Length: 173
Image (cartoon, rainbow, N blue to C red; front, side, top):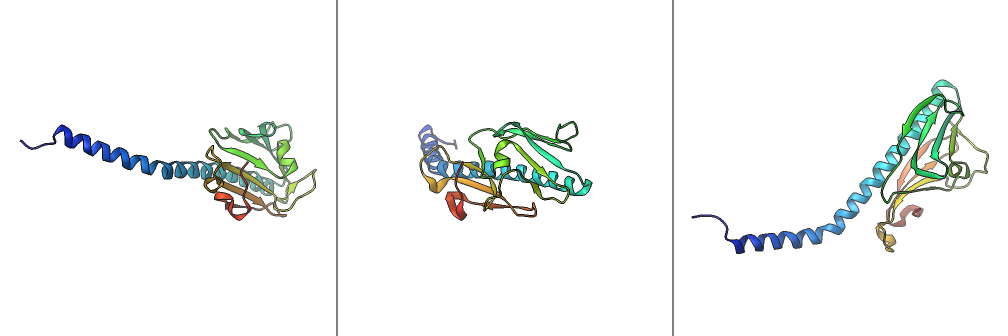
């Protein structure tokens, strides 16, 4: 009869277990990186939607957080300050994802795009204005932090930068 003996099967399972244990740290980094990548892409798309609507319809468009100062709870994109004209809803983020910003108006919970596409501010603009999304992997090793930021230019245009391991000036939230 052909087939596997119990000992051969146990050895094969042991080898697979060792290989899986060796692959786990890399897989964890991959998953964390993908979560941060998806979160920043969703936020960037919503910011573009708000800016595009403001320019196309020549009106102010408001992005308002569901819970002030907590981006993880989601936001609304509205065609008016009272949010009676809701253009889009976002559920926010879950898990270890952290969101922070160095822009005072954004931290307070509202982003307003003017009809020309620029961001309306009540606070003083700062250098390297950004919103950062990060996952520190719940450890003290900064080299494996997953970080991406959306930077804002004076015209309201945005671009995303990968800053994993604190590269490119990145700092986790």
